[in-house]
Length: 343
Image (cartoon, rainbow, N blue to C red; front, side, top):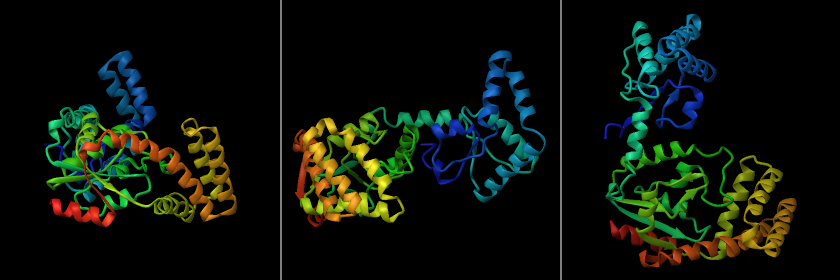
């Protein structure tokens, strides 16, 4: 458990920008010792002429004022974030150089032993066996638009998978600021779980992938065999919920109706085959008219058509395979009472 609390501070990731984007320790800041281009140059030199030559090139690329500025940035961050570590990929050359430069500047800091590679190996190891997930899991299910996420977040025992994935978990659920990399999704998810200090874990029912973020295999398997509580919500309320989240709030936050329409037309086209040409054309017509006329009721019409002809069919099919795990069905209020009675 050496890494369990590692994201409680803002560690310094010394790797290049591209390395950092692919995956990092949560809460880290990227202040690279070598830029992307410099890192490539050093890598080529290493392959051609070996380690010593690569180190010499690295020192020649980061010297003088650029070196002083870099060390000052590290030192300022460490002063503002006591207890932080520095790390590179394996905890080798880049970390050792940073530690020495900081010591020369009068700042003592420890490097992360084994670097990011060691941390990442540890993350993977947490999902190699389903028995790692020892506590009882409770899954909140229900048809699309039932308000599951809002319901989930009313419990302190919950982890919001869609929040971590930055995606609403549906064909139309992408957000404008994108998703974390698969590696970062797993890193954040794992640390959230290991620092979850309750006997029960409450999760929203999800597919194996949330947008592009895939759940670890045994994690998904555990969800599929855990107690399932189903929120039952009327269709008109579901359509209202979807309208509020996907239309009203998006436009209110500043996105133009043209941009939103084009986005949803693209999402609609992705499910055209499942809908069939006739229903697809009807929904497309309603969607375009709803946006062109800024008509709330038309929006609810096309939303309800997608719910009934696409989402409900898929969800009910999957739910039927897990019917033996359903322990309760009811309104949001009665489901909350039922869950509270379990603790």
